Length: 116
Image (cartoon, rainbow, N blue to C red):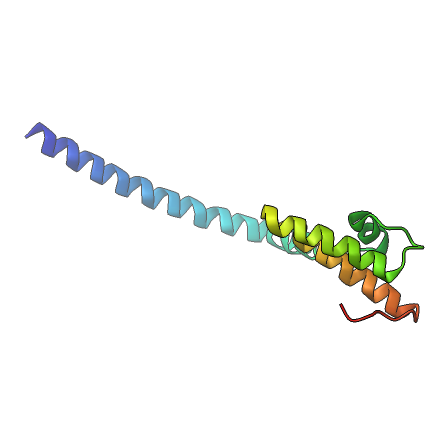
C-alpha cells in the first residue's frame, strides 16, 4: 500500500514538474522576444558566418602570398587528408573553405587555377 502511494506521488510530482518546466520555457521565450535577445542572436549568427579573409585562409593552409597554386593544392591535399583520417570534420571544413577563398583570390588576379 505504501509503495502504491509513493509511486503515485512520484508520477504526480513529475507531471507537475514537467508542466512547470514547459511553462518556464515559454515564459523565457516571451521575455527574449520582448527584450530583443532573439534579434541579437540572429545578428551574431550572421556575423559569425562571414566569408573567410585571404589572410586567414593563408594562415590555415600555411602558405604565403607568393605561394604558387600548386603549392596551395599540395598543402590543401595534405591537411584535408590528415583531417579525414583523424575524423576532425570542423578542421577539414576550415581547410576546404581556405582553399575556396584562395582559389577565388587567384582567379581574381587572373592567374587562373588548374583543375583540382
